Image 1 (cartoon, rainbow, N blue to C red):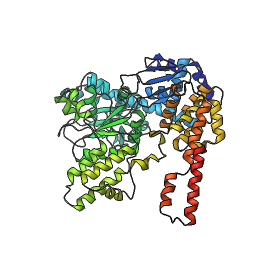
Image 2 (tube, one colour):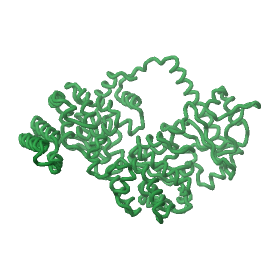
Image 3 (cartoon, rainbow, N blue to C red):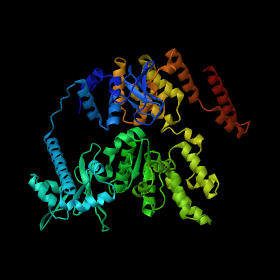
Length: 582
């Protein structure tokens, strides 16, 4: 763990403008600097850097943070790695703490595993490019337009039809075979050691930093299984690795989107065509870990799976995972019988981009798929369709989407909305109901709470006054969580402490909201913070009072001579007088 004083020292020696300028051309714009956002494609600058507070925020894609956050996102690094990178730039020496014996052993073992995989990748590569046994694979790759530079980019190799070629190569390199056995690329039987891969084209599987962590082997004929992958190992976990992520990251940062495909050759075909923001699953079904990994790097995802039954099933499964991650997902549909490789072999990149622009939202694709396979010719059919739609529909969290899809589903099924709501278990999905959803209040935006967060971040005196009033009495939902974080910032050394605060926010949406509020002071220019705070507190007090409209509705159903009617009437008058004084 890096000591906090070292993190502060790096902050003090480097300005965020200096850090960001290595990646973005910035221009002065008042108190801030602006430029084209490196995290999404744009023509008009919406990326702002505030040198006084050492933070950045893009008003286009919503990304925000400090210098460390910027480096983490643009370089794909962890927080400690980003601190170390900037420490080198700033000339700050960070002493590593002594590793425990167990940590030293784990580190040494991981380095050994990495060396074994590098040796294996080199062996397969040499066989493909230089050995007579590789001629069949070279011919195969020629036919698939995957030789030369593209083969080098993917580090493609070939495992010859020999039982112990890799075993002998590792032995000659001084590798203990029992250690290599843990990676699963060689096996052991009563008859001795032998290779996992034989007579297969080899795709090295790499992590986000480009390190080889596993392999996939493809046959060159029609025999089965078509692919076999390295088994799980201490450095390879299928459920959290996406093939080609290391190649895709630069383009993902520009496009702010990911295209997800099933196969290695699907990935290669798109990459070869210049479509670089592509990843693939490693011979396994998409998992929540995969979905979370994609969300960490991109704002939306396009799925491009086969059009057969298995492909449709995979598309629907991925849709459910992306709904759970609240990540917008779209389905690219190619002409029947085409996969990315065959489509791009006969069409231009522009034609593919046209298919991408016509991609349908995943839930819409899901509903249309059900309707295409189940005719609307009976009450029983409609009931079965609704039963199939409802569990997935409940995972939609965006209010507007829920309203629109509810109306669309009811239109397609020719049923009244109340029938569908009944199937949902009585859940009402109107916009009005979802306004009160406090799980994500900043999605719609509460101007009063956002203004008070700005005051807390920008004025230590306002922060103290709000804290004394009681954060729980003012804020709700995520605003309350962020306010509690800001309350921990001391009044002195404000900008540096705010940077540390931003780093301590684990929720990226909280971080984005906070940088949006603090990156600019234009909304507070020329105003007295005391006056603004008084207005905000007055608004909070008004909001906390019971609704006169709801009380009046109760009044209508009561007997005018009853004691309850008289008491309620007095309560309404009292609330009216209190509101008028605020």
